[in-house]
Amino acid sequence: MAKARIAVVGAGLMGHGIAQAFALAGHEVTITDAMMASLASVPERILANLRELGDDESALERVHPSPDWVATLRDADFVVEAVPEDLPLKRRVFDQIESAARPDAILATNTSVIPISKIMGGLNDKSRALGTHWWNPPYLVPLVEVIGTRWTSPETIERTIALLAAAGKTPVHVKKDVPGFVGNRLQHALWREAIALIESGICDAETVDTVIKASFGLRLPVLGPLENADLVGTDLTLAIHQTVLPAIDSRPGPSPYLEALVASGKRGFKSGEGFRSWTAEAQAALRARLLRHLKSARGAVVPPPAGEE
Ligand SMILES: NC(=O)c1ccc[n+]([C@@H]2O[C@H](COP(=O)([O-])OP(=O)(O)OC[C@H]3O[C@@H](n4cnc5c(N)ncnc54)[C@H](O)[C@@H]3O)[C@@H](O)[C@H]2O)c1
Image (tube, rainbow, N blue to C red):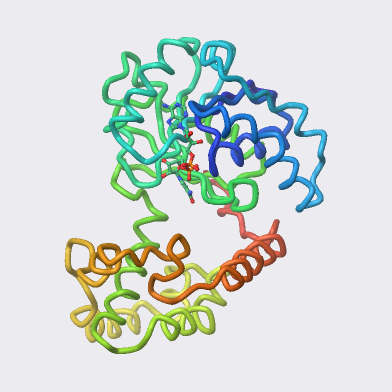
């Protein structure tokens, strides 16, 4: 797939960004959405991103929005679905995708946590279907988790990894189709304990975030937890786990503290209050700080060792 034809279904936060990443890599991209307003704003959103990052604005010429599903899908080599995280909706969308796409096109879902086999279980040909989990913003965060199901052909996995790697992404192969894949399991194991610390009065929300940002968070871009465990010694890691693991949160469901926040309307930025209070200025400052950081980290991510995907 030197220069591929990519189709993106769902032109929201992730869909337009995935389209941008593929177009920047030189691929022709068609994109569709059920909402005209969302589709119509794709060019201006991509242009604003390209300008903000100083990237080649001519990439926009390779992005072709269309409300017509058939026109969007019929020539594509690779289809990415990025509609909302709703299993019945995704299954319906893949019924439509399968009937409009070429029989040899690869079909990928960008679900965040839903097992891929639940989404793809109704397809006639499941061997060409898989998950590609991009991270937001897709044109700045390098990782894409590539998740096969028990039906996915090895060739589908290989072609997808090659396509993503050639587009400058960091694809990793997730070998079992489990909820949350790798990244969101790790991320939400940390969030569960972060919430439990507040819930049990050990510290406040600001302290949780400061502890992470001013300590091991600084090391994470160059030192993964398993590299870190080897660095300090597996024997020390074992001794720490013998004391700490029995004390940390291991409840199977969401925290009642989180459930109470949501029930009381404290939904974070959306309502101005969540774990902490957020003025419009504070929200804008946090978003700007994140973008600055991700821009400065561009290209700095350590690639996986040679021999691994
Ligand atoms: N937001 C993130 O940080 C993030 C990160 C990784 C993965 N994801 C996943 O990516 C997917 C999309 O998330 P998002 O944040 O871009 O959502 P979004 O709400 O920003 O965009 C979804 C788009 O899909 C469109 N849509 C809805 N129904 C449709 C249909 N039947 N056909 C075509 N288009 C339809 C909507 O109009 C909207 O433009 C979800 O599965 C989400 O879990 C999100």
